[in-house]
Amino acid sequence: MKIAIVTETFLPSTDGIVTRLTKAIDYFMREGHEVLVIAPDLGVHDYKGAKVVGIKPVTFPFYRYRKWGFPSRKVYHILKGFKPDVVHAVNPVLLATSAVQAAQKLNIPLVSSYHTHLPKYLDYYTIYKPAKPLLWWYIKRNHKNADLNLVTSKAIRDELDAQGIKRLDIIPRGVDVINRHPDFKDDEMRNRLTDGRPDNKLLVFIGRIAVEKEIHKLIPLLEARDDISLAIIGDGPARSDIEKRFEGTNTIFTGFIHGEELSKAFASGDAFIFPSVSETLGLVILESMASGLPVIAAESGPTNEQVVDGVNGMLYENENLESMLRAVDVLDDREKLYKMKRNAREEAMGYNWDKTSQRLIDFYMDARDRHSVGNKM
Image 1: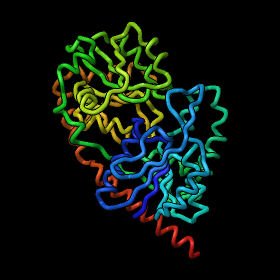
Image 2: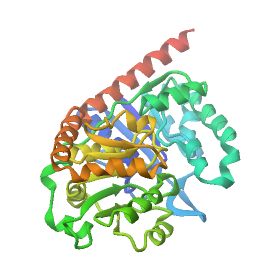
Image 3: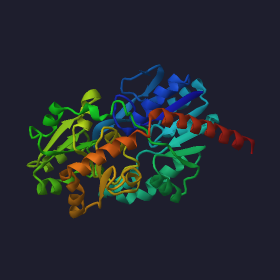
Image 4: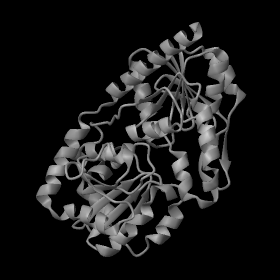
C-alpha cells in the first residue's frame, strides 16, 4: 500500500503525535508498505527509508517555541506525483488542511485524525475564548469529507460526535514496553531529579510546558508537602513563567531529555503526576505505566479511560487541593504503592505499537473501501 502522511508536526520535534507516527512508520516499512511524509521542513528528509518532504515553515512572534507549516499548493503536486492509495491528514489545522483539499481534488481515500483538543485549549487563553464557535466550525469543515475520522479516546469521540462530525473511530493505544521499563530505574537520575534529595518522594511530569497543561496547579501541593520533589521534564512557551511561579518549591526543570536518559527519568520516580484535563489521550500516561509508575491524575474523560483509581493510579478532582492531597497520600503507603507499580506495568503490557499500527492499516483499507463505494453511488 502507498501511504501519504501529511502532518503538522514531525521529527526532530518530540511529542505524542510524533511518537505515534514514527512507531507506525516503523511498522509500515517492515511490512513492505511505501510511505511518504509531508511535514514542516525541520531538516529531516528521510526516516528509515520513508521519504520526508519538507514545506517551508514559519514561526509566530507570540509562539516561538515551535515552527509551523502553512497550507501549501505544493502538497497537491506532491500527492499527485506520488499517487497514494490513501492520504492521512494528521491533525488538519494548517499544513495538513492542504492534504484534505488535495485528496478531494485527486479523488484519493482520506483519513483525518484528531489529536489536539484546540477548542478546550481556548479556555486557557481568555483573549481567544470567544473564537471557540468559529474554531469548531473550522475543525468540522476539515473533517466533514474524510472517509474516516480517527480519535484517540472514547471521550473525544463522543465530543466530536456531538459536534456533528461523522464516520468516527478510535485509534488503539500503544506503548514501547522495551524502552519504557522499570529496569531503567537509576539512583544517579533520581538524585538529579530530586536535586540531591533522593529520600524525598519524587513526582515526575513529562511534557510540553504550556498554560493548558495546568502544571501551576501543583504548587499548593508542594507548599503543603515539603517531603515531595517534583521534576518537570520538557520545554514549551510557558516555561519561563512556570519556573518563576515554582521558585521556592522542591522543583527542578530539566528541559528536554531523550533516549535512555528519558527512560531513566520515567522509571526513577515514585509516581507520575498528570494535572492536565485538556488532553485527547495523554500518551505519557501509558509510558509512565510501562515504566512501572502509577499515575496521579486530575479526572477527565480521556484520563479516566486509562487510570483506574486505586489500581494503577490515583484520580483527584481538578482544582481541589484536598482531593489532590488524598491522592498523593499513596506515596506514604509502600505496600499499596508497590501493588500499583506492578498493576501499572501489567496494564501497559497489553498495548504494543505493532498491534496499534496494524489497526491503522486496517483503518486505511476501510477508508479505501468506503471511498470506493461512495464513488459508485
